[in-house]
View (cartoon, rainbow, N blue to C red):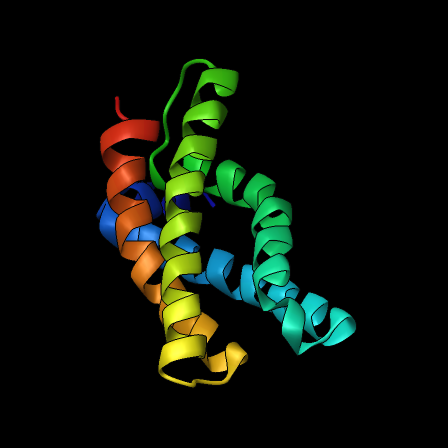
Length: 133
């Protein structure tokens, strides 16, 4: 187990972010899809909002401890993450709307593409702002 931990943290933070980010994105997407299925397709923006709020706690824990491995004030970092997620959410929501309303993509497929775009911005915001050493 010790070797695995050493290997993990010797790996680039970009690779760790990609792995953890894929897990977070999958978890968030499953929540989004489940909420969308329950509420109906017309509630795709609300489904996005709710899934982001619910998945933020897991994402914070994993990013803080497995990607950026930082110390310091958890509350301060969480608030910075919330600000990061807010901007990331806006980027995601904007692209989701663009893909659904202007490109006529299915809301499920559109969220995959919008989430990929938002992930790039999220990494930059996390690295340079939320979890800056």
